[in-house]
Image (cartoon, rainbow, N blue to C red; front, side):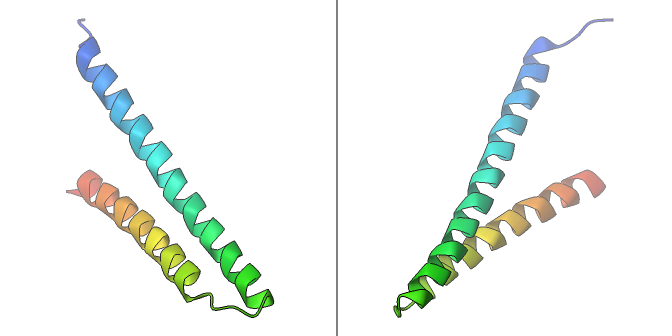
Length: 73
């Protein structure tokens, strides 16, 4: 049995980058929602924070949906 170490390493690298990227996007979305509440408490507009948070969550959802699509097809 021969293990293709180069292919294994590339799969590991792509998985690591994708995981860190998704966690970072989700974290940015959570920070955006917390800033929205903070801005609302101070009487300011929270539209930008809410829009950014929803964009981050939409990107996370799209990435997960694409991953499921790639597994199923």
